Image (cartoon, rainbow, N blue to C red; front, side, top):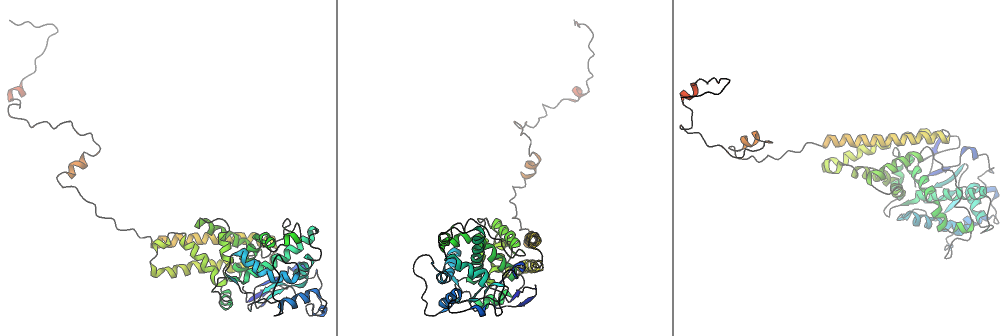
Length: 396
């Protein structure tokens, strides 16, 4: 649920009231738009206008039990299904849906209103129920799937903890790196969980084969970097792949970067090394480093999608490398050698001898001290040696 700026069709930034999903530039002229964003076409008999009027009416009490069986029922049920699939505490959606402006696929407005494009989103969803249960061509299924992933993406922006507020999320979204992270998380998560979402809404029975086709992810300037970073955090924490992405999707912009820093911090030796009074400053330093890297991803949005994806993936690896370096440097700063305990010495009379004989086989016994009787006499010491002859010597 986030954005204070969006990118318009000409690539310029403009003020926005919420997270905005733009129509790809090559599609802007593919479907004609009448002046006034289609207002001229709205009549009481218009199915889409009638569906939106019904959904937004305070007298509409919602759908009957069971999977949605019409466009109004789907539009009402879509938010509850997103909450169930994500495991989030709540959605900030206020129950209202209106048509989006020119060139915009979807907007999660800060006031809780959902904006959806007529041609690319609402029309395909309406067509789902024109002939339910029949197999449609793959291109029609892909069109419906892309419409549904946009709905889930925008609803992802509305998800958050029980105590989250749109005002706090809006403030947080203005900080560096927030838009790249939130849009990347919403897009990656929506594609990862789209089949589950479709099945929960019963659309796989309305449009058989829709879970067998694939749509192309948007936000290639952000998604690859998000996947690299979240996969690395999963590895550091020993979590199943996708755990960090799921957790981030349950947060608003206010809680996403703090969650990343908390995961990286606790997965290192820093909790055992950093004094409590320095912990906040260390966390802030790590967060600033990562935010700066993600803020630079906005420069990739104008590139062709394949090039943007390649550069985003490289930027993600660079971000992980910087995080590793910063953590290692901080650990080294606070990793002071601990004082060694004073060794307990043996009695002085035995210690030198023990050291001298260390590693040697001890003698079997200590020879007794010599006595005067044992000492050789001076004569014995000075006696000349006898010379022996070659044969036996005979004595008288």
